[in-house]
Image 1 (cartoon, rainbow, N blue to C red):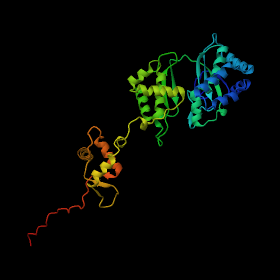
Image 2 (image 1 turned 180 degrees about the vertical axis):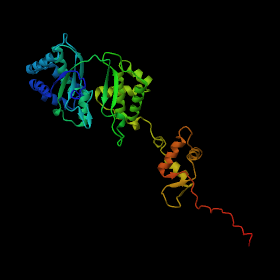
Image 3 (image 1 turned 90 degrees about the vertical axis):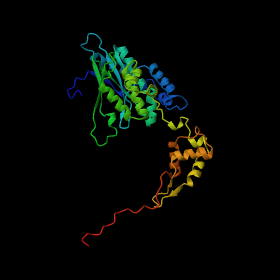
Image 4 (image 1 turned 120 degrees about the vertical axis):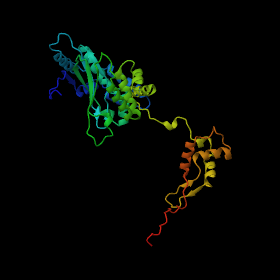
Length: 363
């Protein structure tokens, strides 16, 4: 962006070599891998233990000197220490099939050399947050191959900030259409929360509808975080999102554990589970009123009985009560599953009636 002429705030990078130097100087690699791959403990416990190792470690003098020198050069010409943002950038952050955006930590309004070193050290440890550990495990990424760089950049007192998505999440199914960029603006950190204008509401609602399952809940959770305090109530009132869905998404976002939907396990059983003779009784009633297709186009049996009539005969002939039987629509589904089709088939079509030709008057 700088080469393209955009006004990018100045800053510097702490490369992954500094991360490896810190890990090697404190002899952490073996301990990190042992904790990250331990199956007997929870991800949260493993993350807490790894981050404690980083907290107790010491930044190598040559690395600390290089960071402080770059920081002093960045602050040159500034009377007071201007605030900087300390942002993490993991090596496995943007892959063709995975994205770790938001899974490592960012620290804002950092002032002074000692505060900067502390923020850099905490950024290194955020490579091992619970959500990052879980996501890497699901993606099959070897924990020994990851590392983290840190971006230190001057903060700008902007009135409005924004995010530019190079791929519109609503276009994930539009294969033959050209890709579009999606821009979302919101008020800067420390100011007012994101404003829900009519256009933003439409964008958020349509995007949430295009997503399914965990992806939809995570999108809701990230939106609620951008809305700031009271975001759940605001999203429920203005966007029509369910509070329970948002809370589940917030838990998924904070823990990195994806909840798998299992609607079939909610406890509602099929009708034949509590009425074991139902299917047999339906067959006994329908068989005598059914016939095969005379043109042999299908193996299904055509019955003269409607689903509602089958339900009435189950009550009258088989002794079922109205309350225990399922609805006529469910009875119809059972008929279809058993191979019956509730439609009468004419054995032969009547000949078309055509008017008799009249004798010509000339004859």
